[in-house]
Length: 379
Length: 176
Image (cartoon, each protein chain N blue to C red):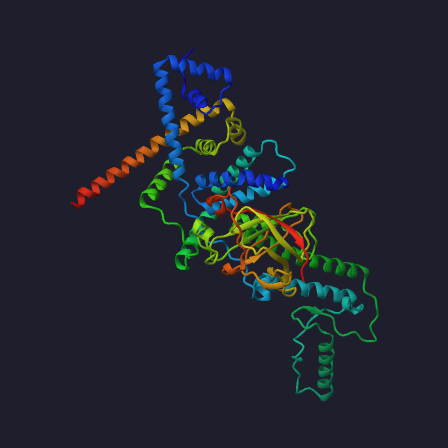
């Protein structure tokens, strides 16, 4: 047999060679001193690599704060992501569309009478005080008619007020033009809004962590929609929490300082419903940031709805809200995702259970600890 | 327990560890791991789960590495972090461990991307077939790749250690 190359030696030491080839290599290594030295050297290299790579595990976690959820009190404008520029575009397009609708419904002399730019409703046209009274009066009357008929958002072309003398003879071409113009305006408006929100979405996605992108992408259900059978809920908590060490496992002291995400599935295979009450029957760590019994519900009005977790008393009554925890569910995703809220998490709100023997410290620090829920009755 | 649970239980921890070693950032590693599992859940079926997960995670890391946004964001957040209160009270590292971690990181960065990924996957227990599938290599070339990567890592690490000791000695002489 030829001398062993480095790749073969490493593959043999990694147990990746077929049995017959491995036997040949072993035999040769016993018989050839040079190859035996190479094998010994490779063993040292492999051991050294293991030590070097394990040093890479000494990396602090939680250095980079998670992007904070949106504060509860936001202005409607921020909620709608309306900037002045977009608002101006949207307003202009709406006015354009409205004017086209008006033109479409206007009497025939709209087509024949040149459009006039309406002054603001509260500002009548200047009256020539030197004109004869009758002329003045005519001007004032015309202004009054104009004000009654005009759209209150200048400057757009508006039709003079219709009179009984006008005839309905709007050319069909003008009507269809107006119709298509209105549709085009509406489409432009929609496109502007959609483009803006897509641009927003892109820029926001680029800025946000992957996790949030994935959550946003996966979340489709509304709060009130019942989840599919076997859907899961993942709870993520941010806020204040001490390092997940044995010390914290032993004592229930201190708020939570690290992000914590928990995936919850249905233990009894009943579908999740929201709002609904649940009992945590199993989790892989004693540090689940949830009381043993809790309800998943939402509060607030349509403009500021938020999903909350509320502790339940032993007899099933709804108790206080668990701060620092919220939830979402996505039926399209077999495990739902819950995003966190701001604020410290009160340690007293948490139930403490014995850690399972297989739990290790680093797993406790990781996201996505798994738990299982049973639906329960509550009041 | 459904498939998601099983996938998560079996592979989440090793995947996060692989990504932490690869990225040097545990938070980032956890985010990439989560994204990886989300994609796994959307797959109808996965033939070789471990190599698929590691391949997807590796590709996600590569894609992110090409963009600068995350690096800028991290820098911005680190600046904010420096101004804001500490959110975490991490376990203090000894100086020696911190130095070793820094040297290990620098040594790893001296490997090519392919060698680095193969080495870290092997350290996470993937077999040659899984590594070959994840990195689109032939199985027969994995041994050579690993041998080269391991040797380069050890040499780079020892070289950096030597430089560090030489600097320390020079500093001692300068002080005296």
